[in-house]
Length: 318
Ligand SMILES: O=C(O)CCC(=O)C(=O)O
Ligand SMILES: [Fe+2]
Image (tube, rainbow, N blue to C red):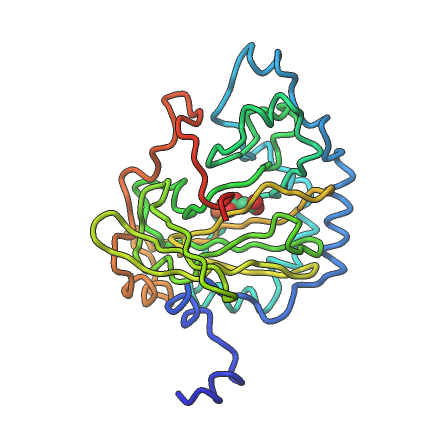
């Protein structure tokens, strides 16, 4: 296709997934509806140090697993009526249908909070600095574990939570307020999906190249290598992106004074009666990958309790 034609024709989600590993929606979802949902979320709690257990309470009985939202403890269950602006947005439905086929399935949905540095108690900061995955659920009071709280997360594939499952799903992410460079924006590594599924933490080396976007050399540890371009997802209220389950992405700790609140969905292809997924755009994407689309083990950063046993973090080093 001539270059000029490419520029004016909208990019199809399937082409975007094949070429780059993600797709940005041209227009935000209904910003007024996003703002109403945000107000309802903020009304449920203060996103400050009151979210957290005391150090003594945490140490009395550390719980590292089962600390994320789950059925029966998920803030979006109570706010379901306010989610049609995403779930029934025509462009989103069309994009999901193209990649996942008719009757695609919602695997889960939740509110994700990027916790600002000012809200993290000093004792906790000292413990978690440079951990690769700072999901703070373990340290949050049980009644607030209906939201996922991050203080930065190193580059990962969302397949990380799904050992023994094909990358037959994608992540859809919606910003509920404007997110700029200082609001813990997501960083995506373009074309990183091309190596398929690899084990976390990933083999990444930062390669700064002049004034261009930062680049990373990414290796799959079995001989494959890609040079990936880092892209920062900044946007206004209702900005929406989706990415492949093998696309590397991460965030730095939120340096701003305010929390960053977003919606995170996982959508999968529907299985037919025989347990096979229906054929859709994602199959065309997966056929282009140079590596596996499933792993029997997705991470090696945790000990048997689920606590971090590796202290190292790429995304914080740039
Ligand atoms: O929102 C964030 O800070 C990270 C979200 C993310 O990558 C995830 O939930 O998988
Ligand atoms: Fe993720």
